[in-house]
Image: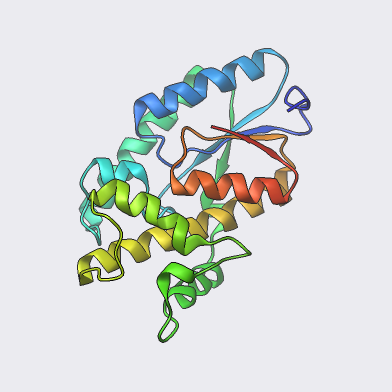
Amino acid sequence: MNNINNTEKPVILFIPEVGIYPFARGLAVLGDAIVKQGGRVFVTRDTGQMLRSPIMAMNNLSIIPSETEIKKIRKANEKIFTMIQKEYEFSSIELADFVNDELMEEIDELVCKENCNLEDIKYRGFPVGKIAQYDFVLETKFPYSKKLSNKQKILYIQYIKNTVLTIALVDGICEKYDPSLFITFNEYAQCQDVRYSASKHGVSRMA
């Protein structure tokens, strides 16, 4: 983390769940300290890219959210994101810039292979099927089992897709911005993805 004050190697606040105020506030305080020491900080902006994030679970969104529910989450995210941008000197990273139809098709195909064991799915070397169980259990309060109901299986697949997407996003951010550090709020599955991908690129990660 010796390069955090180097403007050529920015610090990334990776926070798709920015609509959860304590999460956003905690990361913003750290980011502000870095800016005041001469570093450059970017904060990620999710405008609907994440398939299942903690703010969705917190708001009890349906397993397949309606457009109304999705708009509610986007509005909550945008409100706090705008507040942060007004208060702090952060640049922004649009997650939408790293997502395209080809990537989403790749993600869909990964979980739709015939007779595929969801628990064993890996993406770019990372066991996304196993890691996704963390967020699945966190939301459902239901011990993971191979005998999931249809609803539980759909939710589990959403979390697998989300972990895959996070790896792709962080890989893209590393390649484009060459950061020195990623900061996440906690150890959710998507944050473990950030740690894994950052490590591949020789970038530090702090929770």
